[in-house]
Length: 135
Image (cartoon, rainbow, N blue to C red; front, side, top):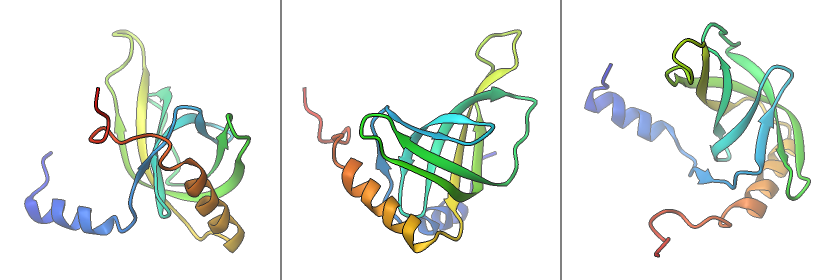
């Protein structure tokens, strides 16, 4: 399932916010999911979590963000799944997979927007991007 150039182009243009990598101690969760943020922007985030390949998920759901290192906590962020990719099962006979979801934030309260901006300010730039890392 490869995308045409036009599709790729519109996909890139649709992402209007810069995505930031985060450190490993930042988690996302709700009542059914517990995962790790891959990257985040003001408009959404990508995260990975363990699940069973037979479990489908709601298109719309809420997420909380927790930074166990700093104690930052923000819950009930409305999200909509934009992309979802499943790994091959972790064990050949099992159904456990790593699912990677890209979500777009829904209607955020001004307080939530502010907290996400604070969160970005606090956490972004702590991790050098791979281009900047020289060994």
